[in-house]
Image 1 (cartoon, rainbow, N blue to C red):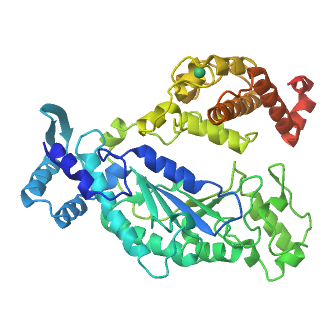
Image 2 (image 1 turned 90 degrees about the vertical axis):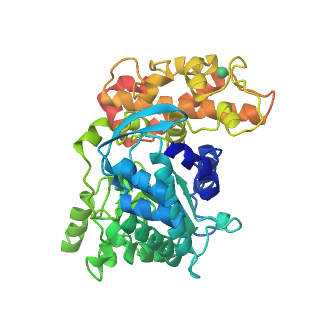
Image 3 (image 1 turned 180 degrees about the horizontal axis):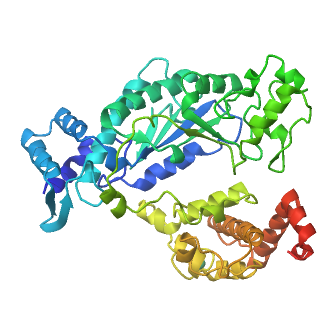
Length: 488
Ligand SMILES: [Zn+2]
């Protein structure tokens, strides 16, 4: 009953920044918006811009109840309603009745629970308070909007427990938003999940990145270094939170380097390639740098607010489905990956590519039929499980893959167990196939009547895979050990 009453008023209460859990708002609208905003962060053109994705740590579990009651009071909920809610959450056992049916019993634990019908709404209310704090942060005259958001004056989007912050790429703007977030975190008990939070910036000059990361942020920031890293080798604090420039005043000239070189200059095929001098400072550089592992791509992780530890009950852990480790992650992202191919495969696995079933869900008027086969309705499951077009492509891939997409989502791509090296090559074939199939699908959508036969796609995939493999020194090494690989 409480949940039903809340649901009825959500639309009027909750601002446009949030879409999840609110009736008549579609999560898809926000996903498309975030995709559009995160586009082209790898390009160093356009206006300086920042995007930070914060993942709220164990969101439903760590929300502070007093905070929720205060928020409800501030939103003018009746005292009686809040009192009922208090009884619900503080008694050891309660049930929620929604639309006349009993929704089950719930143990009164320390926070909001996933699965009961009222928690999502209360969580949305908490996020509404966050919106207020972020609005306050952004009302600071020094705050400047992300250039795409200037007209609609948007600086954040929330999907359930993921929060995207967007701003112009300068220190003042990022600080204004983060101060709003930090205040919210302090009163609500919600903390940031380090491993899932990311920070993207584009066309921000090194000096400003330095300022943003340096002033109060450096202790919160963890770098991931990709094989073509664009971070500043000497100036960015990517090595254990410190900048290498601080080793000595003359370190850059001792290394016969220049001040602004990117990290990629000292990487060859994903492996460190540092000056071999025996100068004591250079030895220190090598020691520090060699302790840093190369990852798939550049990223900066937000490491803030972790000092506030939240105890999670064992009961909760045992009933909660953990989504920390994705079984497909190693297959989709590995050292041979072509980023754009892994990215599209990743979106396909998450089922957030804009297939026609999704377009219909968003209320768009489209033909539902798959343009690749013209037989069935288009969905991710159809394209990668049932569609005869992809089936033919898959059969031309040199390895045997499961035909059922459900298997892939569970991390089972290959029908037989392969050696690590072969698995990486198979992964490259598969992600490239997903990418070129999706590309063909888009080509047909935008050029009615035009099409490329599967044979063309297969030969493109083979060419791209070969180019990628033969440009890799690791692969050359494998070929040395196993000349049969050349036949791929
Ligand atoms: Zn089809």
